[in-house]
Length: 317
Image (tube, rainbow, N blue to C red; front, side):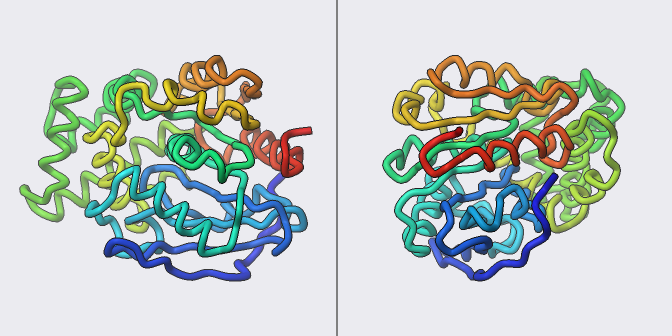
């Protein structure tokens, strides 16, 4: 259901605040501009990220957010906040000579898409969002002490890596991982814990087991950045005020939005997608009944591609 594999027409790095942000461009040079915002934070883009868009219709800009993927320095937390990421997106838009673009993001990418849109609403054509995460304390607590109710065997490994026999509570577990990730107990332990953190998330991502996804998340190219950056953003509550994205939705609710949400999304449960839909008059919510959280699941792919095919530069038809 994805469009065929495609190689970038252009790619490069954007230098900002001691970071080099990797970006690439695919598709038609005169097509509808769209920016792809990956999840995590820290997951990075992949070749399949390019394939949700008709290459004859879209001009697709993708970037690895600070510390992720090919961006340098890898895994860096310095000058790495939501405001920094928003500024990077704007700088890339300007650098590529784009006036306005569609914003496409999933999971943390949906969070960043909403935050970017609220900061730069005059630069957005619309939104296609998947697996909604609003960056609230409740959602962070669920990640640390909720997903394990559905995947107790994986939570057991998650707790073991932190040295707990019983769950100490979500904040205590978050604090414990902070100590481990700091390297205070050795770099090897920090790396092992990062792989456990990433595998925990990957295992919970799909409705049906996907060993390949778990292996990808455990690899050095994803695990180290994903765990460190997710933890960093969780500790800082995504650098938001409480319920910031919903309270400010009026800044962008005049724009078109399609939400694609897996019915059995354990990582980002549908309650957040419903809250966004209720706050955004005119938004479209598509619940995929045979999917969890991952963008790689067939039902999610189908609805995301259907949404990109329907967008005509002004709205969804």
